[in-house]
Length: 473
Ligand code: AMP
Image (cartoon, rainbow, N blue to C red; front, side, top):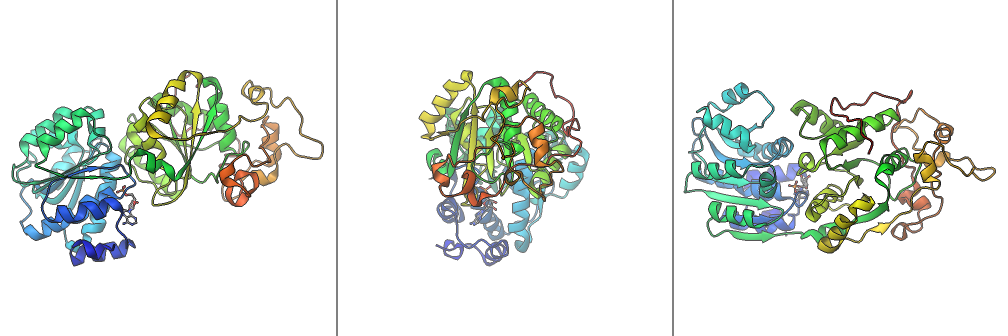
């Protein structure tokens, strides 16, 4: 199946060619024809499936077909998204796909200047991507209205509900014209979402892709049983390459349950000279954007996130997702690990499970069919946690941390391998413990060393501002 078989217009096909996409993903294949035919759509899909193009491409063609003018202080296509990051990301796609169709794209999100938004929307736009709160602010100020909406898209509706946008969504439904096309996307279908769908959609075509279990199939999933107060040390050992884990640590996304937890991890990593950024709801929009940009560009390869902030963001090349704390909702686990293994690639997920999280783990395993292979903790781990270093000396003639196991530049460790040993590092395991990585030295594909940038001088310098609580993990 090719994009040209789906009935898309020439400008859209050209834009796809420029992006280098030739084969539609399953959701695109299933969603594009009925949307082009004018049907409402209910898409049960998560990020990573190609759902943005699944609604944006035919949406653009619907606008082209209707040939209506840009309405004053209104828009023709409205896309609602839960978070600023997702809205910004959708806007980028809309600009890419809509460029050759000559459509005007605007984005409005909270945390930025309302006045600027008023100005940029004064003359209206073809496509508006908005978070619900900011959109209603502008509507309340009479700076915008929804009377021109021909196509309405709700993306990650379940997440919008989780964020408390239910009333906003109900209000928006009252404000959009009855005559319109609605494309409704949600990763999950709890009752509240079903009710919302029946209010928004008219006899929608239902498309469902990659149920939880299949998404997880491409992802190797591992588990550390570790005490709560040991998690930070374990993370440090892994990120610094002093405890070998499967796969090359290229870009690591780490999930914590709370904003403070995220800040705390960043701060403590900073104290060990490991550079990381945090992204969560207490960060300003520029801080969040900068953290994402630095992560995307590979400048800071470790990002600590809460579910809300990370939901829907598309970052190619995440090699590892670490669940520093397990989510209490199994679906959240699938969303989290789905940040890796994107665009058909393999990925690695590791969960740190403490005694009091066993129930969450069971829930995850039961509901998602996830199979997590248990990994051993580093040797002498408790001694490392307590700061007394390895109790056993390294065997004669062997340095405690093999230089092979420490990533050389460009990850730029200014510390030598011997420094690692001085820090009281646990030795990486020499033997391959992971059947799926058989034949590859140290259980790592290609045997490349792991570990991340350690700033010279170590200590302090967390990028995270504020919120870094004194509690230990
Ligand atoms: P999404 O689920 O919309 O966030 O898309 C996930 C990723 O897949 C994004 O990086 C898209 O740019 C990319 N993508 C979407 N459709 C295709 C396609 N047909 N071929 C290749 N990559 C795609």
